[in-house]
Image 1 (cartoon, one colour):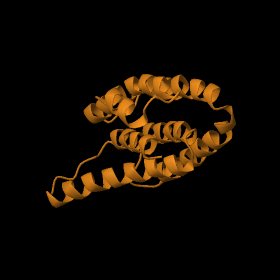
Image 2: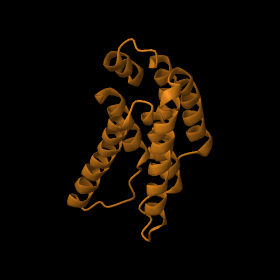
Image 3: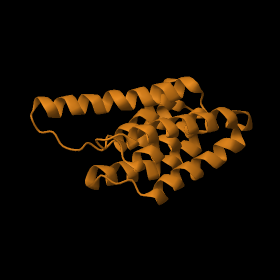
Image 4: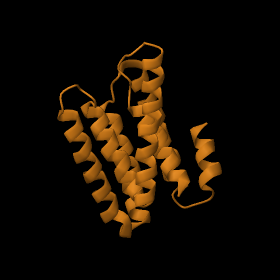
Length: 155
């Protein structure tokens, strides 16, 4: 389903095969995070390197912005993760940095849309759980991945 959505929304662009392959670990990461609130480092690394390397070859001029986006988001999320209250786990920090790096190849608007969408999605879920008086930890990985999909297709 994700692959078909990517193909329809992106069209025949040179990056499409890379994004289709990246969807595989992305879907696995979302399922694992929903099931056990964990984001395995090996899958996050596979996503980052497996998509980042070909994207760097396809758009070598975009490596700087991609690295800047990954670094900024990683540092910001790490700062949030270090705050009391355990708002973000380190898996979320790594996945957020990896996705920002990948979105950076599409440009800063893609990074902004991707991260903004992720926070809006999780905010809506948190609000719904609070209204229903069923507060519990919410996995952020699926929202990050859905946001990345929105960021890729919005620009």
